[in-house]
Each structure stands twice: as C-alpha cells, then as structure tokens.
Image (cartoon, rainbow, N blue to C red):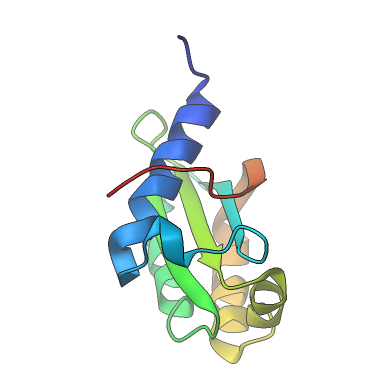
Length: 127
C-alpha cells in the first residue's frame, strides 16, 4: 500500500504524541478530543528561530494534552506542528493566552507560509 507523505507524517506524528504526557488511546475520548496537524514554512534560514518561538509559547496551556514541533527532513525551512487537546474549546482559548500571543507576534515576521493542515481524530494504535 502506498501512503501519501501527508498521511504518513500525520499518522506517525499523532501516534508519537500519545505517550508524551502519559496518555493512552483508551484515555482519549474521540467524541470530545480535538487534534490537528499543520505545516508551517519559515523564511530561509529561520526554522530554528521559529521553533524556539513556538516552543516558548506552548508552555502551560490548559486543556493541552500534547504539543509537538517536528522538523521536516525533506524541507530545511518547514516544520510540522501536532497538537492534541481535551476539546476544541481548549484549543480556541489557548489562542488568547499571553504567551501564545507573544509567540505569534515574534513568529509572524519569519513565517513564509502555511502548508497542509488537518483536523484528525484518534482511530487506533498502540505505544
């Protein structure tokens, strides 16, 4: 079976997220859990700086079960963000947090674009 790059990256990232904070598939309620995967392109040579800003802004977000930043191995300016939230309302509320707003303010000038974005739900897997 041939998988698209988006399917592979998304699936691998989502499964990799689950053990980070001690969560298991059984503890994630697909009816309420909100998860997304998105690609962000940094200006040339600015990927590490972008990662730093996003990592700073991701601390202490209520309702966040996992937040990971992944370097794209095939594109030196691209990163993938994978997020798992208790619910969609928690994700929306996080966008108003001071540290998130500050991260957005710092990152905006060095973001050259956005790639694929997908809202996903847990479908299975194991640790």
